[in-house]
Length: 85
Image (tube, rainbow, N blue to C red):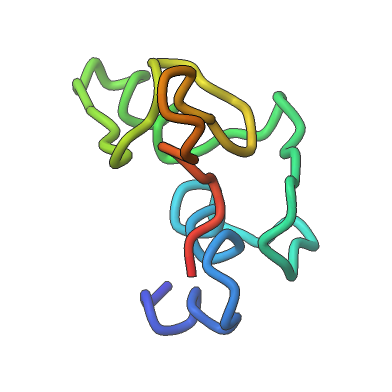
């Protein structure tokens, strides 16, 4: 499967999901979508082989954050937004 075949949407979230999960799971938008927890991903393949991996998300408020946005409690500004355009 080529990278080009995975990037058919102008929305970015479906492309991110397809890169990790191997398909779009019917997603065609940048909304707050949920993927079933029983879906295997490339991360599962790495972990099954004992290969370490990391994830980098600019301004993610904390590890494991699953929200849509994070407002800075001191400034009131959006410090993190899940959707990027």
